[in-house]
Structure formats: structure tokens, C-alpha cells
Image 1 (cartoon, rainbow, N blue to C red):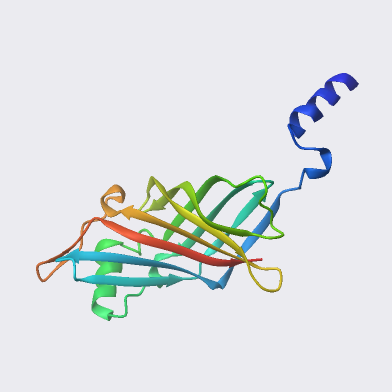
Image 2: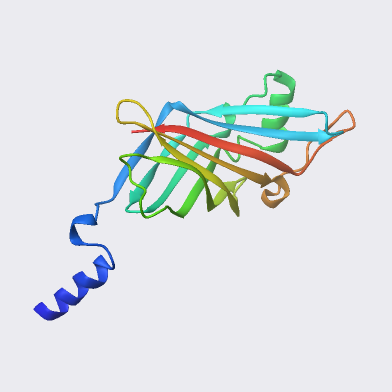
Length: 192
């Protein structure tokens, strides 16, 4: 039995020494320091629609050189700065009364072995995850960064394209102007 326990410890430790194993650390989103933004391009392409939402909740867990996490935000907070466009976006396309939340789940993001929370200078690392929107789930991929901030806090940013048709969202059309299917999404949050 002792021999089996020793073998298990060696397997868990892998190539790391016992002093290198760091317990998991969970960092929670600071809701009032978080946002989701998007950029949609119209046809013709000189039309650009920018929007922003707030009140992101969620967390990131760091285990040695792996990061994963999950973030949710209420779609009703999205705003483009034009009331009529916001009403159409929320009522006709996103149907926020029926589908009030969006969720991004980050899969395990492999970080360089030398990376640690102490320095936390991580930029443009590829990630894959899943996005749940309109009661549909689809795989997304993009870039992730995590930087050390002030007062023991961290700042994260995930950037990825999203295709509306993968979530059964009708392509917006107004006055003959169509929005292209793929929009750019950015999730940003302070973590503590």
C-alpha cells in the first residue's frame, strides 16, 4: 500500500519537484470592472456597429501552467448608443426576454512552464472554448491575455469571432444594410 502511494505521488508530480506544485488559485471577476464589447461590420463594409455590455460575472482558475474559466453576462446590458437599434437588437434578434444570458467557457489554456501568477505577463495566447448564446452552444477560438494589475488584481481579455447563424440568430438587416454573419467579441475583466 505504501509503495502504491509513492508511485501515485511520483505520477502526480511528473517532471516537477514537489516544491514546484502550486495549489489551484481561483480569481473572481470584478463585475463593475468588466465588460463585453462587439464590432459588427455591415454590407457595405464602411458601416461599423460597436456595442458594449457590462456586469460580467465568473472566474478563472489557474493550476500550475493551465488556465480555465467561465464568464456570464446579461444581454440586456448591451448598448450601441442608438436607442432604436438597441431595441431591435435586443427584441428582434437576441430576444433577451427569452434568452437573457450569454456564457463563455474557456477550456484549458496551456501556458509556458515558466509562467506564474507572480509575474502574469501573458499576451496573445491561443484559446478554445464554448460560447452559449440563444440556448445554443458552439466552439469558439481566439486569443487570451492575463496581466498583473494593481493591488493584487489581474486583468484578462479574451478576443474571438462569433458567427450569429451558429446560434440561430437572424442576420440583422435595416434599410437595405446587412450585417455580416461574423462579429468580433471581446470579454475583459479585472480579477481578484
